[in-house]
Length: 202
Image 1 (spheres, rainbow, N blue to C red):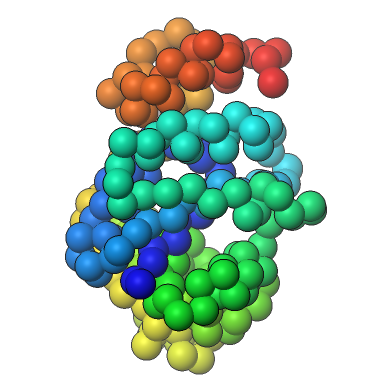
Image 2 (cartoon, rainbow, N blue to C red):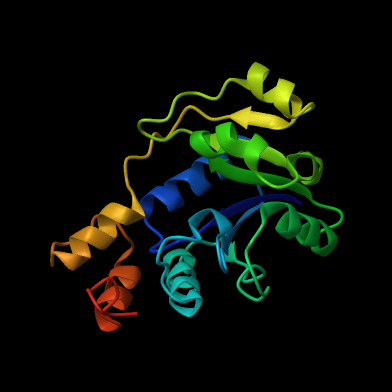
């Protein structure tokens, strides 16, 4: 199988995540895209993140009606910070015969040399970079100089250009503004039912 992997905090999962996953699936003829909610994302260690149980459940709700999407809780079940090289290594063992495609944003691809063990990341999976509003196109030549072999293992998508952020969605909830156009309906209902993103709420 050709399996896409889309990691993220998913706090909350939104329509931008779904659009990126669908574009990668269509462009690369992927059999499936697996959403992987982060347990304790190391890059956001200083930020407040919603409990993993809520983010996992919202992600499941977001993809429930999508036959080519699934959710893997591998990072949530791992104690301590979540590191991409560990996750990809474990998934490679789970799917030894599959081609793995790690989907990330242009900004994250540019930052990849600063991640732990980028050499192991590109060995485990091809990188599929999707554009984000305000992020410049990655310089593959410079990235390849920092992480030899990265350019040959990278695919740059030019669409969709996503202008949706979880931060903005959380702020809209805090201000009691509608978010139905930004997240799938079951996710909006879950947020309301559990009073997520309200001040003083977990």
